[in-house]
Image (cartoon, rainbow, N blue to C red; front, side):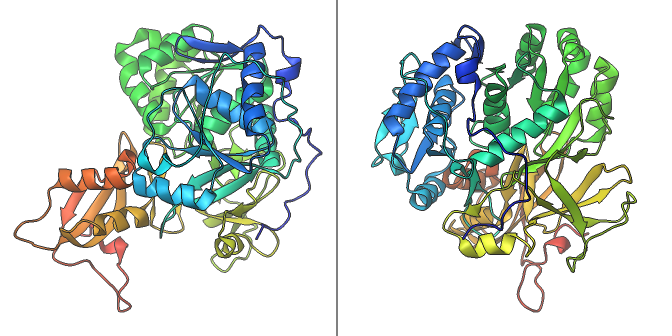
Length: 493
């Protein structure tokens, strides 16, 4: 079942990457370390991929931080096929669920990549970044699926959000308007490529504009300084990265110089603490701007490049996005006073169309008039700036730039023979934003599993970033009369 029709928006060119035909062939397009492609090279390599996947329904992409991931994704999308980015650090159980749910026709990888067991039976296509094929047509319908990105749910396995081509183009064009993003910009980032921040904004964004992107491979402050001092104009990161930058600035004058010379510093995926905002501004004279989005909506709001970089806010709605705050009963809040809290609901061409194979979840996600229920709580200032204050539910943890559902971690913990009961919460962490805390009732109080044993158990089943950082033992979990765990009581006293 698809979502209600989005609000009207201007007609969009069907091409996601017009620069593949228009940009000078010798212009730099994408670089990972010492490996790079010009627009001419990217068009040929993506064209070769498009020829091999044409006619498929969905194709998985083993989304390592390598040149092949960028080529694979562009090739699949320009062929009019939906790509399913796979997190290379996912556990076998999580991978098995995603593959069974999305049923891809093949998986694209870098040559020689060793794949885990759940992918063994899937046809494999190795990406040759030096191959040459015809420039792909890139002319599929705007409503055709482009990406299926899996989100961490709070009460079960991840759901596949189906993002149409119009959502990608709408969001990237709205950000270009908000940030003054042009083909002259060179973006640097070290984000993973299996979610929308690193892949859609960080790779597809520069390529839609006709500019270039330099991926750090692995984030470190030395790489940030090198790229920004070497011609990069923009930096994308998550709060954990900017926290590490703020910590390093006093001892790294080249880093301070690099940030001071950047045109735009953008943070997203979670709130950047005001303290880190202020430390970076004091050391560099530059303000980090924040934006707000979700897998299901891509980007909804942003501080504009020509606006006030107000710490603690995510700016104003992007062009084409309708945003409202609602009370618990669903009635819209009309007085934007910077104090009244409501749930954010959004409508626009930036939205996903459905959760794959989950018509019940899709229907529940939308209101009757087509607004998506984000579950995020916020206040709005009279001038339109939005400040997010938390989740409607208590079960979504934002750690290191990831949105992590407590439910799937609880389920993994309960699979350990030494755990009788389990609950998972988040608590503030200066580096990660939030750290994952596991509250367990051991099966044998005299011989409980160790913290390391439980962390490794979760990392093997799900992904390393979902492992508990803290484990606390209890005799019993606090429950209400209906038997539901009262998470707000955890940690009291």
